[in-house]
Image (cartoon, rainbow, N blue to C red; front, side, top):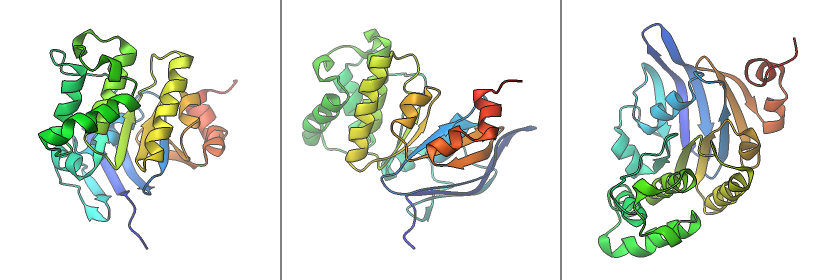
Length: 241
């Protein structure tokens, strides 16, 4: 069988008595889009940190293309094709939008200086920032900061893109634009794992959904099936008493 793009086998992580990842198994195929939901503190961002290499699991194995990357540092995973956005955008405020994106392309994707201009222009066009390429990142409004966070992640040349609550704080119209952008990213062959509380945006994109609670996978499957499951309605959506 062809190895999955990403596979987690029995991955666990604790901080003292607090279990943030509890024997997680996960498989993601190339080009697939997976959504992750769960209440605050469920372990969603911790899962991203484990996949991206910012945290090392206490036990279990993380495979990329069938190769064990459990002990591989974050920068090497980035160069191997794992790109990531963060929930709170933190661009280099004194650099322009283009310079922020170029830095990711140079050091993440390994692009040469001669390749950077066209490569980054395409990404800024895709993310709606081409008209603001010369703006300083520190003065951008929230929507554009989120767009830049996405652009920087894409500039690392990912085959797997981790999106951490990128729709938070956006209007409905802005969410629709974001959905269209992520669909185009998928059309280009990039796999996506998306953590999101704006559920309608998530459901418009993903093929499959996972629900986490206290670091455990409590539901997994087709998006409608997971959203309508009793356990998800209880721990995440809320049900009438």
